[in-house]
Length: 264
Ligand SMILES: Nc1ncnc2c1ncn2[C@@H]1O[C@H](COP(=O)(O)OP(=O)(O)O)[C@@H](O)[C@H]1O
Ligand SMILES: Cc1ncc(COP(=O)(O)O)c(N)n1
Image (cartoon, rainbow, N blue to C red; front, side):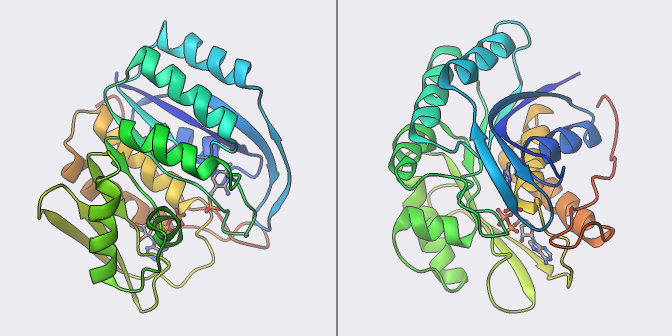
């Protein structure tokens, strides 16, 4: 069985963060493990509170996992602070996992800040160059390139610029762009782009879509797929997970983590 690790925050409501990642790993038939960076008191309506885990404890969780259950792929989500970002970087330098998916989580769908402003520079300097793929949404990509992104042409330019920061491939998600299509742009280097286009589904159940998508990419990479195939299959998964979601809670509901296969 393949092993996948998520380094992320906990969402008590079960829709995003560690909980979404572990459900996604399970549904892809990979063995899921976690390093918790922060505990959020959260539901579909919003975030009531955040308590970060100490840097020592984040490091110890990494040590415990890497020295015994070395993951085939790693996903990084909410890192919360500059100090936690630095300790994750140190752990990655020490243990050198081969495949890292970086989802640069900054603000929740319910508009709560999940990454300190002071940590953005550290994330760009220390984590982006270690990633095989980074998966910002439009707003996160705008923060990284420090300019507005309004259409697919600008997504393409931004992806190329983000790749220059040192990660090997870039996926900018267009779920938040105006219009009735959800277009994601995958940049694979040089002039190699792949576009993933789906009809936008009219639903409130999009809490944890970014987490689920990046965890699905991570699971597919753990199984040995290349980046292009891992993203293509993950896109099918997230679209179906949104389509088949059931209304839960009074706010942004979770997606449906349906099972696609075991032990493969
Ligand atoms: N309403 C929607 N209908 C179809 N696909 C969507 C919708 N919202 C988001 N997606 C897709 O879900 C994935 C996660 O994207 P997004 O919601 O932009 O991430 P994040 O949670 O990081 O903001 C992307 O592939 C995006 O295109
Ligand atoms: C712990 C945690 N990690 C990530 C997200 C982002 O997910 P979303 O953008 O769907 O709110 C979240 N809300 N909570």
